[in-house]
Length: 347
Image 1 (cartoon, helix red, strand yellow):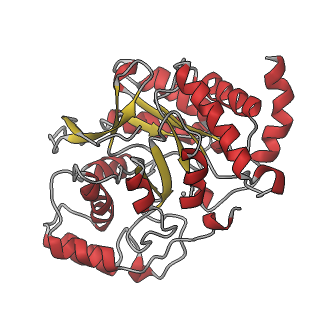
Image 2 (cartoon, one colour):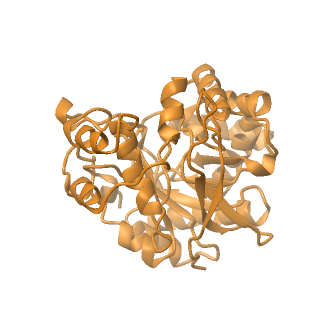
């Protein structure tokens, strides 16, 4: 642990400020279906699909559920509570990050509340951007230590630089060095897949120029109203990278009440067309997941967060109805609530 101790000072600086995220070979995507009981009344909802995002070092398919439990902004205590509730509701996917400061709570929830096998659980985490190779390896060692796991199913670099966009940590060479460290993690079996977050097209080019392992995911802000804020969706598709949404309900966004993705005008109007049991937030989540359900699409799933059990259940109940073509057209055309750009300003 000597290397880890020496790294903690640097790490605390790298994690000390937030970002737009902190405001919440090629692979052909395939779908598999697994049934989950997701309501307190034990009624059976439609099966929860998974998307194959790549293959681990042993050649096994890495299947990511299209709905997961987000934990951003939760401390260890709240993360523990929310993840345990999510497991009770049938979730098999949890998203966290070293920078969230809650991985001990997530790890304890896995230990205490997960009732399936380790192979049935999908754990996603992140290391800070802008790290040297040695710093990246130590950061993932810390991930595994806090989560009390021997491996995760996905680890990504959280940003194309450090959060401060320090000149020395915001370069093509730095991104390439950190990516090669992620490949080291992958080849050692410490993560079944590896990826990126907040990466714009030129940042992806930096990685693809030297990658021997294809990035499985690029996690970017995406929701009704955001559009393709960083102009990166086609780039992900061209390179076989799953484009995954964060902030699917635009929780940290500033918007007028009528544009809310929980109970705003557009999502509520569409929800009402689908019966009394469908909510505006379910429409907003279904908008993204319905794109992911197209086997030709490289859009991935959603990771909404909640510590309210009823909301957790509701968020997962998005596979029992389908949005019509006109619904999808109107949701695609929405320009509010807008996403916050800026990732492409990173050199």
